[in-house]
Length: 438
Image (cartoon, rainbow, N blue to C red; front, side):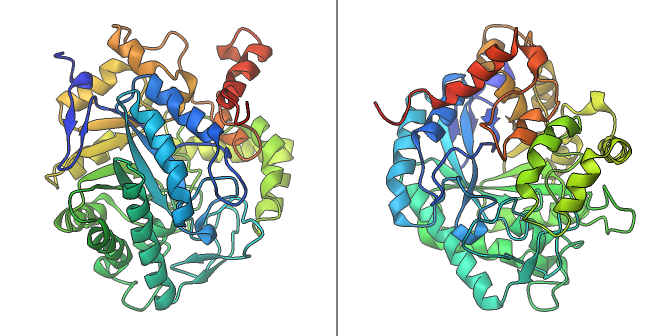
């Protein structure tokens, strides 16, 4: 009971049984129209059964135009409420909380679907990595999107879920407004930090007006943009100094917690920090070819023997030392925690109990969120509870899981962690058990 990992964490409106959250991650498990499936429920229950205190859902679009790709469950209509209620009920059976991540892709979407061509953004400039096109949002569109976030929060509450998280990190729409390297508006939603934060603060106020102040609301934010990770000519974007001020604004508006991440686009060398899985990307990046103006170029460069190596070297150089992946965001999280009085969660490759305990004991954060190491070991928290400090077969940070996600079921694709390829495939396919039809 003295282990800080297993001390309950009490927010203003929510108590979580331990200090480990499953971070937002999921595959294309749902129907094309945005309705949810049994497969997504199976996916979430894996981690609830494994002992995490709370699950932060994957990217859940508040509008169809705001999804990163089809086959992700949405929260855009009241018709979605029964599905999320059923999912929450199944997760709650394992004494695990469920926090829905309200999201909007903006210009950053992998597969746009049949409904539209361009994403909505703070700018009309295409994203520099894939060349996804977008249109600058009008004030009316901004207001409509703010209302969509608020309605998403209402639906999450009516579904009996435990709270919501605003996805304000990793290059999605809220980041596109916050980042000084992306937002080039000249109206009240651009220019100064206060103006760039206006969209996010409008969303927070609208949610509080819709659901009250007794429903858990947290914000995931990129503390440091590192927007220049791939280009020396690109602006660096927001710094810790900027984000500390934004987090203080959020606390003043009634946000209950901050979730510290990094990067102004996704994937980013520092998120998910690890290997550049070029062999897997060559197999799956073709799914994106028709989505962006630069995707065919990227695909051809990835396939080239020389150019592929150059891509890999740029990624490795921007990422930094491989042995510093675990807890990479702790220095940023600590500075945010020193700036606010609300709890701070930190994400970033955690999988060893001593590292997590040290972060909690030093006051660098109040809890950690984990994605890839939990994909590798769904029962990681139960290992910690039994006295095992490090998983016997750890996550290798190979990033093959995320490279496969656009085309294949999400799971661990590092064959060296299994006795055979057949064993690996069997484990990946367990997400379909139980099946939707009996």
